[in-house]
Length: 207
Ligand SMILES: [Zn+2]
Ligand SMILES: [Zn+2]
Ligand SMILES: [Zn+2]
Image (cartoon, rainbow, N blue to C red; front, side, top):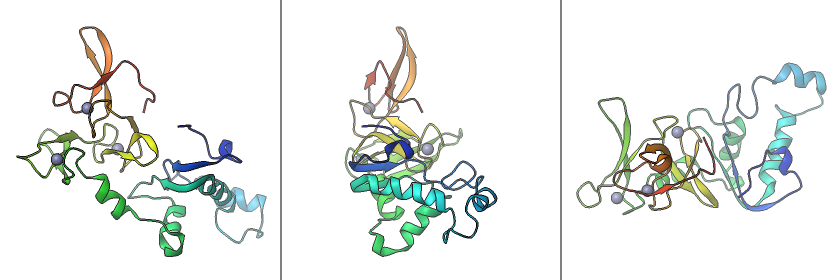
């Protein structure tokens, strides 16, 4: 697994690619800060599409992946590029409903994981098979709404809501590692503790 910026990936290819944070907004992609005033100075009237410069960067990103590209976009504010890709069925892009339905399946029993906001403001997902399975997971540590899930072709877990990346728990199908402290100092333990005792000494990514 290699992390690269889109520009540094130019000229290289992989079978599967993941485009992180394809969101709209000021820090989004295309960036809405650098929009028209600057770009129209650079290329007056000559670019037939909006965001033409970033559109070329996007096309570099999309064409780096030979087989699949997964774009992780905010559901509320997806990048305008993601919206365009979804709008035309000839692009062969599968949309969020499909991906999300799968993303919310329990790793223990394949039942549905249901969002459960708790009284104290914390949020959980629990398996619909309460009696038979009982699997439950805290919501994403970054946004408290989504859930970090495995992505095909990627060894981390990515929140379907905010795009944060977490490290997979080495001991269970659904958990991810969070910082904890114990009698022997800091370590990284499964978010499903005490149901899962998976842990690691180091983190590959820090989100
Ligand atoms: Zn289950
Ligand atoms: Zn999140
Ligand atoms: Zn675990």
